[in-house]
Length: 318
Length: 318
Image 1 (cartoon, rainbow over the protein chains, first blue to last red):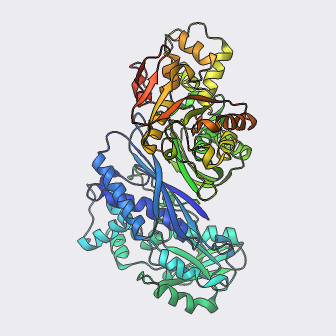
Image 2 (cartoon, each protein chain N blue to C red):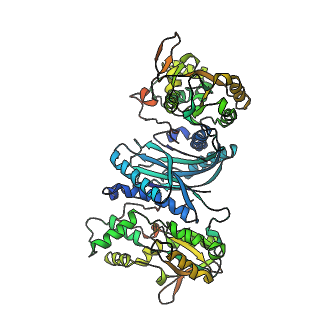
């Protein structure tokens, strides 16, 4: 049995106005970040409970639509919403929070952990990185700042990734099916790709070399970063909230792993971004071969004085 | 498998200054209300997760002691704390919240529900009622109000009951062991005795007659109520946060049930306070035989204009 919980809090993880048009997405996100915790161990989500705290100023219709979105996503992935708690936050400074508890199943002894990576394993990731951060940057842009010339479709894609994370259950199941020889470690990247590399290295007693130019960054992310005069690789490495998977794959099983993820039906590729290494150094290799220590950390590195929101990605502990 | 969650929120369920001397008690309460949810179904608690939200103004030492109290109570009752989430509530109006998620076990088909009460069953309760409310009244007394002459030991007992609820796992196990013939329904009374009678009646399709003079009220509760010119029976029926058990016991099994609870070792008696009845009326019989409808509800009936705290008992949903 797997158990996890993650809370999303207004003003910390999101602003309510982001979800004014589609409150359902907030419910979907609150559950998706929890499903990601189960996917990160190669499990199947089963049951969830939801604690909803809201001040009386939050319209009931908004809450109803948040719940509806959560219930929809639960149905899409076979998760049963079996209960919860509701609390009035009157007198609390108000706001809205959703704390989701989720249970999952995995065959005994087959849960995938951070601690199994071995020197020589490829660092494999699903999907691409930095787009959720691009969406956050756009959502949090001060009104007086210019966005440059970002096409509407790119804007929508970036903000959509921030508002609703992907669910990588199919990819997780495909990777878990490789068996203990084919995959040594698995986690998700909710706290940022760089942070997760560090956590796997720490748990496994290995080092890592990440090739910056192999980290998958979508053209949209690059476009938004350019428009905002920011660095897409920094967003990809440290931005957080990507909710992609990261795995340690022995090189001789790489072909099988990539094929399994491609065949999983989620339309998501597996990309090797480096290797776990003997020793303890965790390094980033630049485009011209230069190596530098890969920083540990997410948002705090990039917080801007102009941004009132101190954004902490949910999903950090299980 | 049983799953439940309950959140306690500063300013809604407690004030932080109540726990200044003993933050451990807050951690114990956050877990105890969840254990009560498992006890209310005749189950054994197994694992818990804790989401802690706190603004940066809450001292780390306070949080450490809250956790320590929770871990202590978990150890006392064989519950394993296996994870959780932490969230900074900066910018949120601050404060402190603890959301506990708990799993429990019960033999398949043996979970005790609210829905099994039958006409003629005795309404049986553990312990006594109203003391937690007495404690809340004392904690929330405006400084200018006099307390009358309440002995210090009584004050301590009442406040202690408010700050840390009892754990009725032994009594729950003893009642569950009576088997489906010996006990028809079980719940806890976190939301108030009257409310729970209503909920059992609704779930079971029965009525009830509660004898006011049979509701167990401790001498301390009566003393505090007198000193504050309030009604101890109202506190007992509607005060909430007693975290006692309420059961539907067929009369022919009463002796066995009372003996089982007495033998459970918790020092807690089982008291019959009335009967479930055919029909749908839910009534309170006064000391002189007069009957009146038993109100549904807890705090809102008794909220006082002078009380800023809108107190909602945790433990209401599972």
